[in-house]
Length: 337
Image (cartoon, rainbow, N blue to C red; front, side, top):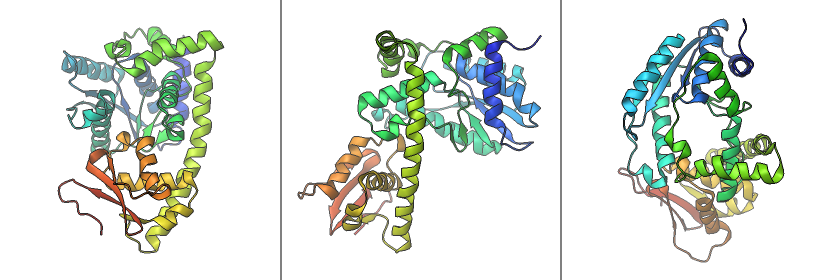
């Protein structure tokens, strides 16, 4: 007897995602024990060996809920039963400083740091994440509500080395159905129903309200919009990188960006150059918002002698001597002059 319809859909998505990897490559599945990542792990355990690849798993214990260590151990044991090898449990500490960006952002930063470390340790060719089409729709809607700009509306990329998201075209209902077909009992994260978190409100209130008002297909339309905007955003990112490369080729100090040069750039390119410079100076990637960059951009386009702009991570942007300087208060950092 063949797999159920939902299992087959998830397996096909994983197969398409892994088809470009070489035989013998190791693929790690990040699994929380929820329906999405559990269905993904089971599918990878089935698909990867048939492509000549190895599949392992990693579960991250954030230590934010009672019994999280025991749950992580049970998830790891289940991944082992799927036949995944190696299987790692990574315990992380969510830093207080990072939590200033919000508890969700802080946990995400700690989780990716742990996944990076495990991937490097085992030489993984890819790390699979269980985000679904519904997650993508929620991300776009959150970005729209926050006025976060085109980068956020482009949603999550299907690939950004080493991370891959095979299930961005798969609905959350399908992963739940796949677990049911396989006799798996997913863990229900209480945060997913905690309305203190914006994503929970979007999931259980905002999206259903939009579906009721506009008809079915809202989630698919939002995900489709993300895909279209991501192609545009990646093109602009490439153009901005080329501009920054010309600056470096001319021997200019990357900490000090010439205002005249910046002013001549199209706005969409200029703000990306400024964003990349801020990240190079030490701004945490996930904490830097469009609002921050707009204020830095005003040092170029709306200069009235204003003071500098304080950015996340102890970075400060200011204009002096016809340049925009990014300096860091981190130990050992020096100010451009």
